[in-house]
Amino acid sequence: MDLPISLQRVVAEMDCLEGTTVYLNKRTGELLLLFDDSSMFDSELENDAERLEADEDFLPLPDKQEIDEWGMMVSFAQSRDEEQVTRELLDAVQGRGAFRMFRSTVTRHGLLDEWYAFRDASYEEIAVDWLEAHGVPFVREASPEPSPASDE
Image (tube, rainbow, N blue to C red; front, side, top):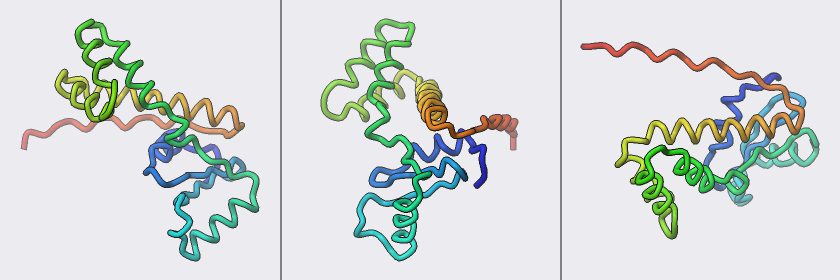
């Protein structure tokens, strides 16, 4: 991969599976995914781990620990115009099962698409801040136009 790197690609990689870390080479734009559990290494993954140790240009992308998705849910709730919806969403993020309850509440209010758009924009903002802080050039790709629905 060459620089500038696609912002959308970085965002997609930041939203990777738990138990993995994605590294970006700030000089070349190369992305490497490593499993956090070293017992899962095969020879290719071990070679990647050695490359990471030897090349200081590889930086770990922000991970789930650094991305405050709970804070995103609170911000989304507070951005709602209807006080009752805000209250229900804020109640949903309290205690055990907050992510599941929040999603259920968002779905019940027909806000799932709005939540995903808000979440995506939040991830994009985190990625832009991170890329700029590390001096990594990036491009924003135009979103594809939605295809017209067919009546077949």
